[in-house]
Amino acid sequence: MEKLNGLSHLYMMVFLHNFSSCMVAPAITDVTMGALCPGKDECSIAIYLTGFQQAMSGLGTLMMMPLLGSFSDKYGRKAILTLPMTLTIIPLGILAYSQTRRFFYLYYVFNVLFSMVCEGSVPCLSLAYVADNVTEEKRASAFGVISGIASAAFVCGTLSARFLSTPLAFQLSTLVAVIGAVYMRIFLRESLIDHNLCTPFISHVNPAVIAKIDCEKPKSDTQLFKALRSLNDLTSFFNSSSLTITQAAIIAFFSNLADAGLNGSLMYYLKAQFHFNKNQFADLMVISGIAGSVSQLILMPILAPTLGETRLLSIGLFFHCIHMFIYSIAWSFWVSYAAAMFAILFFFAQPCIRSIVSKEVGPHEQGKAQGCISGICSVARIVSPLAFTPLTALFLSERAPLNFPGLSIMCIGFASMVSFVQSMMVRTVPPILS
Image 1 (tube, rainbow, N blue to C red):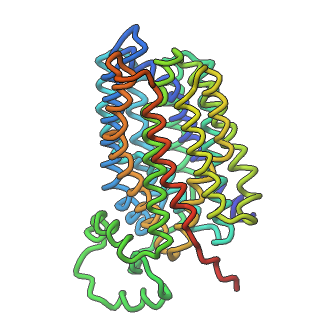
Image 2 (cartoon, helix red, strand yellow; image 1 turned 135 degrees about the horizontal axis):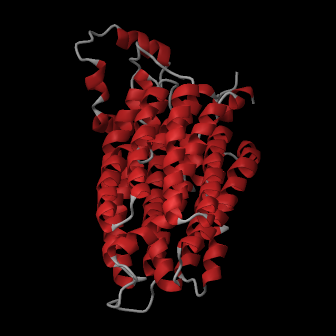
Image 3 (cartoon, one colour; image 1 turned 45 degrees about the vertical axis):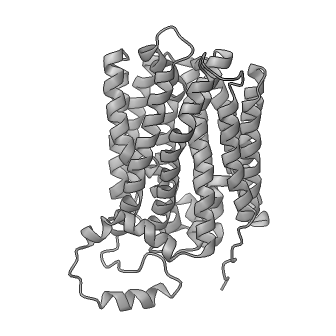
């Protein structure tokens, strides 16, 4: 518990970062459609632009996450966290200044470029920071706390958006992002700077022995060029990993494939089907966020030690499928609110995946391991728009071959079902207690 309390500055940084980004989430659909298709509830170009942004950010993250993870193992988590915490301020500031079509396109270009570097990097590096400071048996609960704080920030951010005008929401979001970056630089203590790091990426031998052997090798290559081989790290992750890590990577791929598809489609589906606006999007997100906060701050620390990560993972993924299927057949607006409440159960999944992977690698491999799992998730975010964006645009248009607007959401649910089936096959080896 003392270690968990020692992470208070990290928790505050995660809260501020997520609060800032979530404050504008309910409004971005209206801003996008207002700039591209004023006065309409259906807009194919907005759906395609959202899909393109997802694909590009996924491609960038695939390249950058293993790299950032490697750099954080070498130069420290805090030093590398500075980059995404700073870059996220710029796109927010553009829309805080103006939301006309010209400024929207400027925002869009910067957001696509910076999301290629920043997307998912703060959660990834935060998990590596936690792994540096928390023992294996407490890691699942600590990861759950991180996700719970992110959910609490999600609730606070979307609730704020519910009562703020759209321009004011973007202005306040920009201010909070600046405060978060400054807070992190001043208060967060560096957790790891290893100037002699030479442990292999994935090893099943005593890390101290391997480090001793490897350190005797000539260092003709600089650490910089070693760190830049991000795709080689990703390949090494599979070639040298255990079966459990491979299974976790498959689960991460399909669950993130479904998440990315839902994130890119759901708001446009609800706007076209039930004429949702910023306030209703905020209500939906608040319900989901409160359920997720209860799940990860209260239920997960209680259930993880007793049920274990693998059972919780299967439970979370099962309800992940169910809530998508409910969205797809929603016959009234209130059904969407009911589906959002399933977050109390499906939010177990992501922390469990990260905890399972964390326990399979050594203490000097946490940044690379979490970065490579994020890279796998990025592949899913590249594939998802290619698969689901045309389907969503087609079935929300007047050219739909049949009257089933939720068909794309149902297909996304089947992708999530693959991850659930795979989770039933995961078997982990419990840590040896001394």
